[in-house]
Image: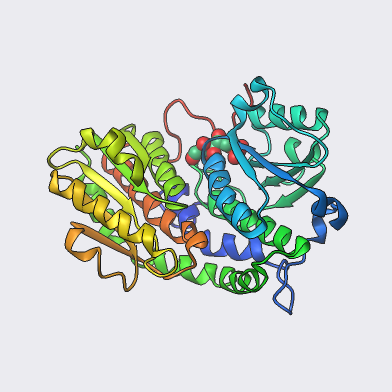
Length: 369
Ligand code: F6R
């Protein structure tokens, strides 16, 4: 049932191109527009929304952080993201014009369920993004957009995360399409590029050998840091979470711009630092800033694993190890940039002799608060 792989996690990482394709399937029409009638929320309601609030836990929370960038950019609706376990305890401000999006692979996470119940009690509309048909979270929501990742068996989430991102992009683009924003043309173009994502994820998967090799060489490292900017920041958080849960190592993700406000004090000779580099095309200011961050940490002895777009030559002098990812629009980059981090964590954990499908102390679905 592991389809020839040693672990479910490896199988599920490899299944990501198909999972992404299945989540897109039937949702882009022949004209290149989105058809999400399955949401069953009237366009009039979608046009009235004045705030989006995303609640989720763990990896799904990281998908939510990325969704915020997409939703605010394409729709200009303010969007907040909160870990579900904190949400209701601070008496959040919600009303009928708030769209709450609950993201959950299992659909049974108690923290997320309690957050959505609280949101509905306050009159907010709740949309679930979920991978498990008929589970509790979609049943208690006003609407649901299913991710079609197929069953995810490994405790660490991989293909579910990528499909959560796809679902979030679809919601963001759909809201933009229904409401009409100044980004109309860009939205059309991004839908076209999203349709190419399965191929791009496939491409990344063929270039993972150097990542595996590096991961194996780091089995004795005490700590690994992850840096990113913009949507690369939540990708860094996700890379660190994967490493904590699988390799039981200290790992932390930072917004690269925060380095100088404290974390740079952690940098010492030989410390492995993974850096997710934004595209040099488009928002090139971010790219140039992160290149100087890489210079700074390298000058202090860090050993850098740089994840950068094909054709980005500026990073080459500062990369002890370089992983290339395909060119994508900035907002879609997490779909390809996350893959090397999953492979990295899986391989490092295996090198340490850990059971990657069943990490200690963790359960696949957390049904207690
Ligand atoms: C990390 C992981 C967890 C889950 C979190 C939410 O690899 O699997 O952080 O993402 O427990 O679970 P769901 O998405 O089922 O609500």
